[in-house]
Image (cartoon, rainbow, N blue to C red; front, top):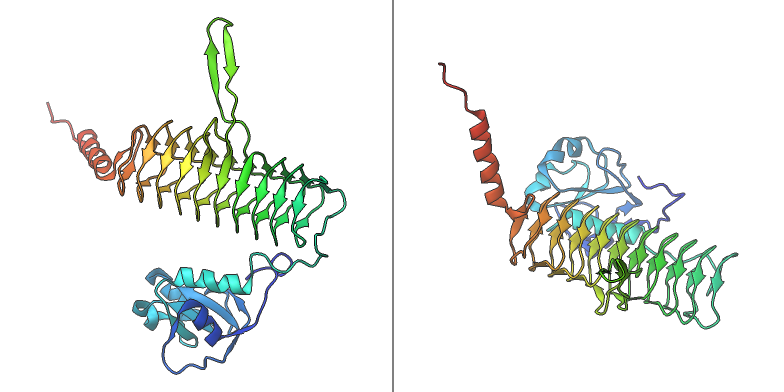
Length: 348
């Protein structure tokens, strides 16, 4: 159950309101005016809590649950807690996320004055901030920066000169933004660095040393993007680094210069994307995947965890391994190797 010291709850709400938000269809003749006060796990729920049941593996927990209302599928409705009002939805986990956003808005009304600037923050006189922007302690807003309505800049964050932040954005503690333009509804978690130099060097054989190639591009972040803690996104060399709308990027991801990420991509923790890779819409890169430079990955492709991608990946293709290969090929090779190494020697 969420701790009220950290997460501010709204509500309570009636079950019929939850059904409206989630397109849920009530099973049986339960009272849709029952009040639900909070969200909880099946095992910890009380009669005032909303839960969800998304898989048969949780049937035992559901049987013992005391929750007041439960989101589930039609196939699992008979396994829902016996005392709960059951709302049938297409995707219980997604429906629960919708309800959670209503109970715990991602950006509750700030208990501060309009255009609040905490002690120790600095806002350059040439920056443009909407009247309801919140700037927390120790943050620095550079010359010519623009910040849209209802956005919040966390403690110790740095918004560099000319950076543009859209409406309803949340910039976490100690974030660094340079040469960056972002849309609306962007969430940047603590410690993220965006817009720093890309890794661009050329060896000067005459001088006998590496020379830095000026990085003159930007980072373009579209609407509804979320970027996890301590992720780094380099600005482009001449063209821009681009993060498409709806992308979800996990913690500790490295995205190199000139990379283009399509819409709704999922990039899991510790992925490394080398410079100039082009990644289509709805691509999934699982944990610790590495991409060589200039690789193109087609829309809806999937790359399994710890894979190394050295070649272009076709749209919709699923690959695995190091180097990455079609996932069926990978498992066939594993099976063949197992058969070879598992053979017993014939007696002499």
